[in-house]
Length: 323
Image 1 (cartoon, one colour):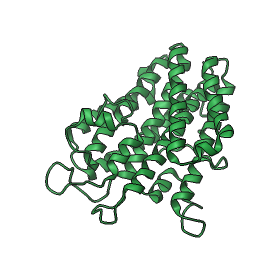
Image 2 (tube, rainbow, N blue to C red):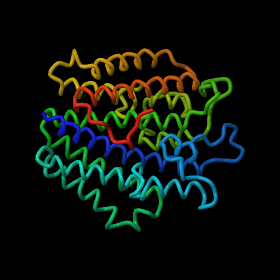
Image 3 (cartoon, rainbow, N blue to C red):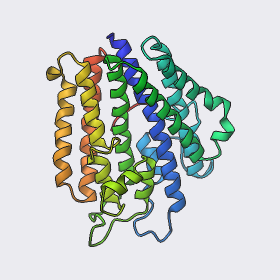
């Protein structure tokens, strides 16, 4: 496969996944903001200021001179076409990427992403009622795109790069959410002693669509540390960091003619094994934050390795970054 085509497919997957996870994050933090209480002993950890910092959009957004930070953040990350981090901009990039590879993807995939893009222009008022309406639309359209892709594409190199991009972005975005949500400086895990119960963990689970899965998989109450362990290490949950890392490794292994000599595949293999080991050893919120930092650095290195090996060194878009 041409490096240019592989590059477009990889970033098509990342753009669609970024749009979905950004919409989910906005909805989750909006719910957390509404549910927060002044007497909360831990405080609102899913804050708009922290979100903007994690997303790299803090400059020019914040303060009270142009309105509350919540409204400004929602506007900047939802419908601002000039902001490359917004949902609308991600969908527009995905549509442009799909247009350049129309001979590789199926006609139904093109129809799904094109309709996704046009929906923002045709129904702006309905989508701007609130984060829930926008998030519901983005989740439904993203699910349609991925569902059509899995039913209509050959399981070849093209599908492997599309899948790798989407799953890589999922791992990165869940890490971002955990950095926003995990309260620093607390060592309890809600299983005895002083619990780390900040009320935002439920909103975090809702933001990644994992609330029902958590309740089925975990006996611990949805406090900060158990939720973080679930989203980091539970491989049976497809959007956990561990599951996404393993999915990217499998996709790249199937696309690479010599995966045993592939630096990104080898790095992902080491990271996957490290996550499995840490999943049985990590106990408190502080060490979980440390794990997030370690995994974030490894994903950043993997991203550069993928670019060097498969895309001929073609640089990634500046608005996509991995901490």
